[in-house]
Image 1 (cartoon, rainbow, N blue to C red):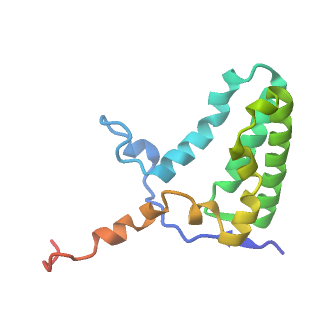
Image 2 (tube, rainbow, N blue to C red):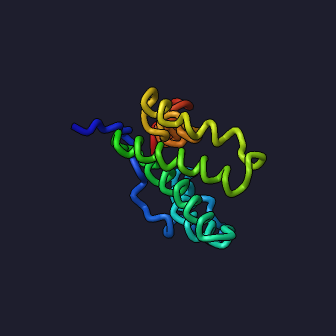
Length: 147
């Protein structure tokens, strides 16, 4: 039986394209921008890879990010993402040498433990305060009635 790691998150329901205005991305929440950027990674990173093997290595990272990005993820997603993260870290070291490996790669390999301890990444990662901004705006602090 699959264990679901679900976080109750209310999405705005408005498509990202409808939030981008002449002023740019001012109306786009950080979580929406993160989702948009993660879907664009395949296209953005392709020209940066010098060989097809390097691109395959980057695809492991992108796959792990996609699996872990949801508000409701299954334990199998966490395990598969961890395997992709391990493969990425090992292959990255082969392609770019040990000097290019940064501490964040080590942290990435501990995400599985953090997810099992705290829930989906969206529960403990930065910008989670955004989910409560609407609730904070509705608090009456000046003792006046609504509109």
